[in-house]
Amino acid sequence: MTGTITRIEPVLPPGGPEPEGAGEDHPMRRVTRQVAFEPGGWTPERRAKVAELFNDLAPEWHTRITDERLVVVVDALDRGSIATGPGTVAVEVGSGTGFATPVLAARVGTVLAVDLALEMLRRAPAGVGHRVLADAATLPVAAGRADAVVLVNALLFPAEIDRVLAPDGTVVWVSSLGPRTPIYLSVDEVVAALPGRWHAVCSSAGWATWCAARRA
Image (tube, rainbow, N blue to C red; front, side, top):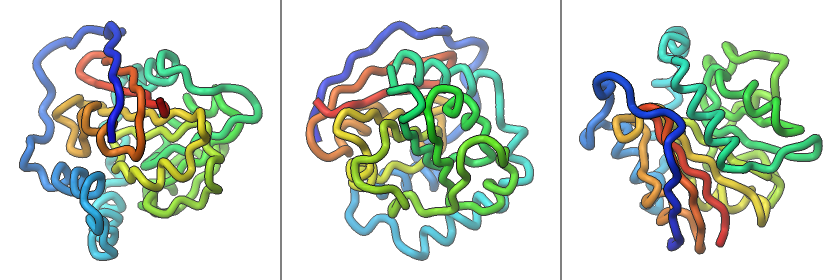
């Protein structure tokens, strides 16, 4: 609902022309805001449509992975200061084909790579983390168990993230195309959507942006 935001220097300046991406009228942009801010914004019909969309996209998803996408995830985890070590647990929401999962697995004890699309998970690395087919609105995670919830271009379900996150846990929000990302909320919107009071640190790597939020 409320909080503070600290902006720190980017690890890489934007390079080249602004990437093509989504505008305010993109269908997934509207879905993102409705899910984050409107009660009842996530319906069974909408869930089925989103699952179908990403199952269809799965075979060519690897073509969207760029070095910049990985750099921003590494930067977010490092400078966002997530808890690390053998006993820690990270929930990767919308893990897709798992390009970011190895980065998480190198830092935390257990990674739950959660996605709604079965075809995405089938293409993810089997030996890195635990692939979980689930709806992020109802995560199969005990209350307060996650040291970090990481969302790379993923829908934000504020109440569910608040439920599973440990008291001192971190929400990491990454937008690979910055404001041109189809599934996008600004850092101000992320902080406003999460229940309670939060402090967020945010920065960027190229055109990609990230924020790491903790309860204040």
